[in-house]
Length: 359
Image 1: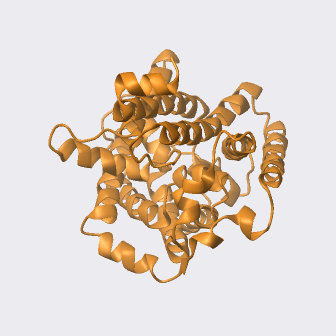
Image 2: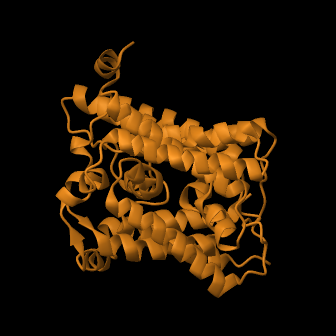
């Protein structure tokens, strides 16, 4: 059954939501098995170690770029209606939001996507952080914190014509593909030094491929649907806040790709952990600082909305189409995470860049 037939049978919105569930499920499976996490990768780098966690992140990062650029070169995806490239963006939001998000990652000991994966496997601290991440993201997007977020966003803006790095540097998509291949080569070198299993590298690359799959799916549906379908990829900031809003809305509200994404990720992570006997249900440990988890989730929620995306929404999805604000947000997430680690943790604790929550 083709997309057009499926849309006619199921309806535009149901088909979009099903696509979100399917993509999220595969992402959840791969992210759980590879332990994909930007925070863990940033800690390895900040603490002078370039090992397995960094290799995993670089495989996902480079695969997202390569697969997305390959889709564009194959005329299977067009960035003409991608919000990160055509609308006015905020450089101040990317910088400040990235720093705040990075700070929240270190306090939570996980990035946003990792919080949902860990929650599915029974980690209570991750669940607490994920809940506050979602609530504050909603407040920053459309609620009481939105005036603050908007004010910061207006400090330094950039016109849509200058948001595409490939256009700014007068480089084509083939150059973008080659640039992504350089990052992939770096991932291979680090993986070889860290003796990373080839299967782990393949799985991590699959995480990035899910980003390209989401671009392709939403773009294809947008060309067939009579409704306005946003062309976007994966992220966790807007979908988590939308899920809360949907739960509080009257029955019959429209379904979207994003509404299916989070449930799909949770289901995929749970299934993968269950199959590998990696479920770790536990109660809250009083020796752990739950206030730190709450603070981290809140900071990531606000920072993610301000930056225009989380470590996946900006770090993989936005970067894969070379959106300048996404690249800036990503780098400042790394800086914020490393700076907070130095201030809060020092370099004495767990030099592998992992904690009980990040594993």
